[in-house]
Length: 279
Image 1 (cartoon, rainbow, N blue to C red):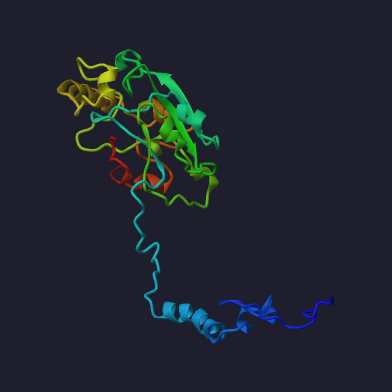
Image 2 (image 1 turned 180 degrees about the horizontal axis):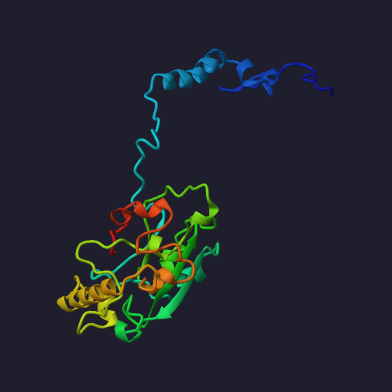
């Protein structure tokens, strides 16, 4: 028997069923005035909605940063310029272990350690710059290579190296972007004493690491006073009375501690560190 439904529209019985002519048709062309109305309205107001974002932004206050007149403060854990910290009495925390240089993925750090010498300076001793056996005689960071990842400060076993919030490192001379120890070393604060001088009497290296040192002792102050008095008597213009780290390779531009031929050392970075000058 021939099928009478071939070529004819069939309307299936049952609620919610559509005719065969609507199958595959676009949503806007199907039955129901609601769908067609929504599609028409969306097409009508689509351009207006796009321009609404622009109109709404036009009447908002422009967030313009007036740099460098009004620099915006950085985040508390911002990774800026590095700093070599000190203990409360003034001795350096760096022990010249070179772990920061090994951890640096950009090979931007150069460290040369040396042994501390408790021999009196009058007898040819070089003095003590840090607790323990060694200290960082030469310390350089090449900011042309540094990526400010912070891996170096994670590798430091004595918390000697931290990162400050100082970020204005641009310069027109590539050589000045190789920072030396005299630039990176934290400035003396409070009653700190300038090294070299011996450790506090009765204390060991571990006592410094455990935070048992609150400041210089009377014996350390007397030692530094006698040292400075002797150096002033022997001072001349040939530069022989300079500290060892100032005469070390890579630090020849530091004629005195804290002085350099670049302007970055004049910025007080110690109060801007993550945890202060002595974390």
